[in-house]
Length: 280
Image 1 (tube, rainbow, N blue to C red):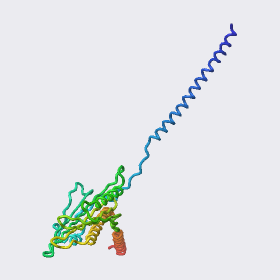
Image 2: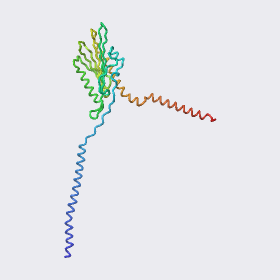
Image 3: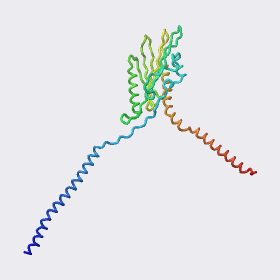
Image 4: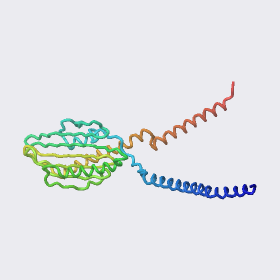
C-alpha cells in the first residue's frame, strides 16, 4: 500500500507536463499575434497620414498705393490736357488694400481745328498668399494671363495686336486696337503688367472730334507705357515704405555714428578739462 504513493506522484507529474506546454504555447502565440497587430496598425497609420505641404511663399506686397496718386500730375497733364478732374475720379472698392482704380478724361477744344478727347485709367489688383490657393505671385500671374486674354478679345476691337512691354514690372503686355464709337475712330492701348503679387491694368485712348485728326497709334501706345511704368513704380515703392520706416538707411546710420562719436569726443574734452583745473 505504501508503494502506491510514489507511483501516483509520478503519474500526476507526467500528466501536468502537457498542460504546461500548452500554456507556454498559447502565451507564445498571443505574443506574436500582438506584434503582428501592432505592426499592421502602425503601417495603416503611416499609410493613412497625409504628407505635410510646404508653406507657400509670403506675398511681396501687403498694400496698394492710392490709384489717383500713382501717376504723376505732369504725366496726367501731358496725356489728358483738359482733364475734368485733375486729381482723377476714384473707382469704388470695398477694400482699397486689395483693389483700387482711378480715371481721368477731358476734351481739349481747339475751336475751328476741332477737339481732341483723351481718357486714361489705371487699376490695381493685389493677391494674398494662401496655403490652399497658392502664393500671391502665382495667383497674380494667373490673373495677369486672364487680363491679357480679356483685352485681346475686347468687343468691337479692330486690328488688335499684342506685344511684350519690357521694362515694366516682372512681366507686361501691351495690347493695341482701333474702336469706332460715337461715330469717331478711337485709338486704344492697354498695358497689363504684373509686379510681384499685384496686377496693374492701364488703359489710354483718344479720338479727334469735329474734323480733328485721330491720334496716332504710336503716340497712344507711348503714353500708355509711360503711365504704366509710373503706376508699377508706385506699387514697388509700397514694399520698401514699411522697411524704410523701420530701419534707417546706410547714410542715416553713418550720420548717427558720427554724431555719437562727436558727442563722445566732447565728453572726453570736458572730462580732461575738469581734471586739469585745480580745485579752489
